Length: 266
Image (tube, rainbow, N blue to C red; front, side, top):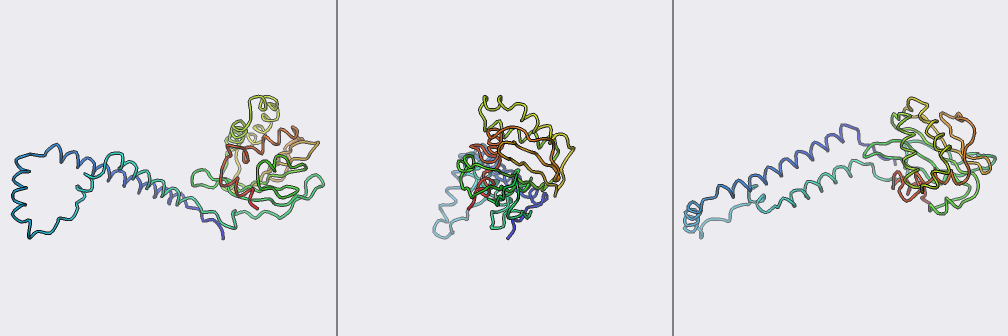
């Protein structure tokens, strides 16, 4: 069963409903303050005396919207609005399912003379929108980042764009994720390789839905970047550099926590 993606207009509708709720709650809070400001002791006393005459016959009044507002503090109003907003946004994000990607990835690939198996696949989301599908291929099954980093042999990352991706933005996001999961010394050692990563993706105006790109690592040769099935120059870097690349999705600050979990699922 595939994830269902919420269209843009659905997300916008959710936001509109949240803003309407916030506006309504704030109006109730304002009404509560106005009621206090215009309260007159004499009028209240007269009303109380009149009410006492009918105590035995009158039914308890139903809470009005103003009465509800009086029970709500400003903090409670804000918390209610935030809870509603969070619920709507969470509901708009597709749920995790057995068939986790719209794209279909092969069960195995050949890399550097080695047959690699599909370890896991998932979708990178930005807020409620799909960015790309990603599949991880390894020589043997891994279920943790530590196992993946320590696993010898070739590795392969296969991507399929799910929305239009400007090349400069994609390259920038890759480098941002790499730097967030690398020490300054590690990043310094691989300045040339990181620059090449930016150059490869920034060299294209954009990728459109359905376009594929990949990162292939072969021990002793390095990392090769592919766009639309074509290698983008010679391999670069060593084992450490490809580990830095992997940390974009498998490090302590991954690009997407749910994607990381899907890629490492058994």
